[in-house]
Image (cartoon, rainbow, N blue to C red; front, side, top):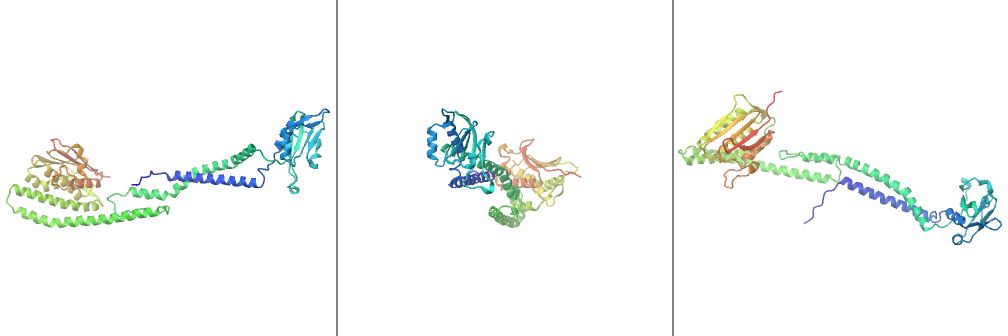
Length: 458
C-alpha cells in the first residue's frame, strides 16, 4: 500500500529550485574565474608590495653617522629568500637613501620630486607598457629612522591568510550581489510567470467546480493550459463522456422499465375495481397505487431534467386543490380525512406545474401509507409561497429528518415503500430553488413544509 504524498505549492518549489540552480551556476562561475586568475598567475603572484613595505618599515634604522640602515630581521631574511627579484628604494627627507636589488632607473631618478605625496602607484604609458615592467608602489611610513619614502615593485607570493581574504573579498564583491539580485528577481518573477502560465488551468478548475449531477455534456476546456496538463484534462473529459454515456443508458433503462410497468398496473387496477368491497380490496388498491406511484416516480427522474425550461406562473392554491381532489378517495378509503386549507386568492411562484403536483402528491401518499389509518391529513397553502402536509402519525425522529430525503432510505427495514418519493420531492423543490423541511405537527405527527420563491410582479 503506497503512502499518499502531501500536496505542494508548485510556485514555491519552482522558485526555490531556480534560485538553487542560479546559486550553483554563480558559484561555479566565480570558481572558474578564480581558477583562471590563478592559472594566469594573477592571484598567487599578486603584487605584495604592502608586505615588502611592512618588512622594510620594521627593519629600517639609523647608523652611527645618521644614515639609513637595515637590521637583519627574520622577516627580512625570509623575504630575501622567497623573492629573488626583490628591489626597493628608501629615502628620507634629509636626502639619505638606501636600496636593495636592481632598482629601475626610472624610479631611482625620482628623488625628492614626490616628497609631498603620501602614497601612489607609478605606472607606464598605455601604448608603451612593457609587461616586463611592473608598476611601482610609493608609500610614506613612520619607522625607527623617522618618516621615510619607500618605493618597491616586488612580486611575491601571497601568504595563506591573505590569499583566503582576497578570494573571499572577490566572492563577496562579485557573487553575493549577483546572487541577491537573481534571488530577488526569482522570487518576484517566478510566481508571476507561473501564475500567468497556469491562468488557463485556473479557468479549467472553475469549470470543473461548476459541474453537477444535473449537467450533461459538460467538458473541461483545454485552451491556454500547459501541454503537460493537457493529457490530464483530456482523461477527465473522457471520463465525463463515459459517465454521460452510462447515465444515459441508466435513464433509458429506468424509463423503459417504468413504461413497461404502467400497462400491467392499469390492467391490475381495472380488475381490482371489479372486486366486491372489503378490507382486502382496499389493501390491494393501495398496493396497486403504490406500484403506480413507483412507476411515476421512475418517470419523474427523467422529467426532472426537462421540466422548468422555461418556468411559468404556477398557482399553488390550484395545485393543492387538484392534488386534494385526486387523492381524496384514496385517503378516505384508507381511513383518513383529507382537509384543505387554502386562501381564496392565488399564491403564485415560477415553476413547472406537473413537477410541483408530483411533489405534493408524493407527500400526501407518503402520509397515507405511513400513517395510523385514522385522523386527518391536512394540506395547507400559505404565504409568501409555501405548502404544508401534516398527519397525525408517529412523526419523524429529529436525527432522521435529513436522511429520509436520501434515495432508498426507509425509516423501518420492513417498510413497503421504495424510498424514492421523498428524494424526488427534494429534487423537485431544489430545482425550483426552494427548500423542503420536516417539522413536528401541531397535533402530533409530522409536518412537511415546501417553501418556494414567491412570484414578484415587476
